[in-house]
Length: 476
Image 1: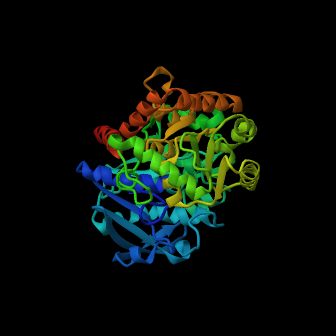
Image 2: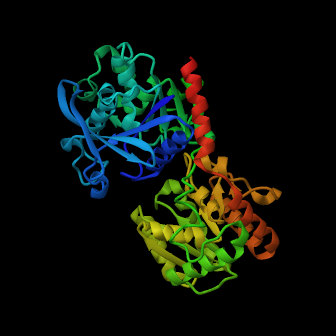
Image 3: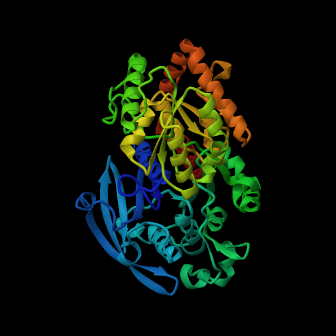
């Protein structure tokens, strides 16, 4: 079986979020299961030069973008056994950032079509083309409307994965002809609510649609989560399913992580957690209090991450609870300001670092006792899985991938603390249960840490689910 993974970003070449982790790790997991998986992504100008130096030039072609034809250079690289193709066009990709440009519709239209155009030139005909998010949603559209009858392309199946339904690639209707180049009779594929909607086109044309967790696949049928696409998804629910993401266990490993003060595993978890907690307290300027629970928060500081819940009750929580908190993240000004002010008022209890420092994030995962993630919506989430990998117990709201990966430990079997409704005092209740368990059930707490370390969220299971899906599509 041969799979082409089409993504706007992929590790190790370019990353702005979880999609890059998925593209890099899933492709490796598929390869380990003897699936011929290759990845195609844009050749961004900001890719590290040392990675560019290892690429080889394959050939150049021209790619249609509606009425124009644009240069397309094809470069090849290999990482951890996986072949990557990088699509070069300096007009589109020689930018200082990968998203947020006035012509993103045209840039990713070019990329989505290039992913199909390059195939005969690289001598790779996939059985499955697996596309991801709105930036690649036009690839199934182009395949269905322009390529599927071509003898060379016949028989390919397409999968479209929604990583975050909030970002849909919505533009004015004029781009359907002038940029995308669809015939008038095909314009309805993209048309939705008076706009051209790339994600809607991908949902409509792909042979199967997945999300990054089973719960999210159900949630996006509800208007509260769907950002307007629930009618389309309900109509096509027959080809919608969710597969929980995994994490890269080699780069998230408390036994080898160079950012930790002491490496640890199940056999020395207590000592390892204590040493890393002390190091984190020192790094963040908090008092050395080994017996006080330390809560970590590593997040984008935006509302859908549940920060309005934190804002609603954290003053009360810190004023009445012997606890320490470490916050790492950046985002909306109102939340950055809030956490700075909170640190000024409770300097011995909370330390805040605005920005994102990967090495500090790992120190927080390794040194915190608890990890707070009260998201309003969370398609999958990786932080809760990484925290478990480092023996740090998550406190989460039961939504999306958080619901699928974390179960409440109140039954003596779970791996975290959860709350259901999006309510600040429900979150506060979960926080207090977690802190109470830490203080008053020491033996159980130690068991909980070991249970966390034994959780398996490696990509092997997820890859197996994708392979089942691919095989089923090839039978149809």
